[in-house]
Length: 53
Image (cartoon, rainbow, N blue to C red; front, top):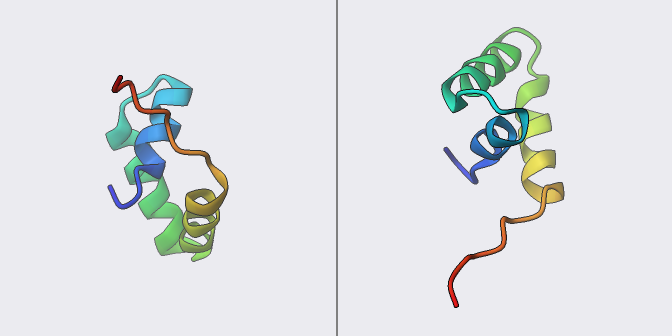
C-alpha cells in the first residue's frame, strides 16, 4: 500500500490488488529482488492524474 505500486499494477493487469501484493511479498521473501523492483517502480511509474477540477 506504500506508494500504490501494487494497486496500480493490479488495475493495469485487471486483477485483484491482493493477488499482486501477495505475489510481490513472495518475490521479496524468496529472491529479495521484490524490494528493489518496488522502489524502482515507485520512482519510474507515473502518478495517476487526479480527477479533481
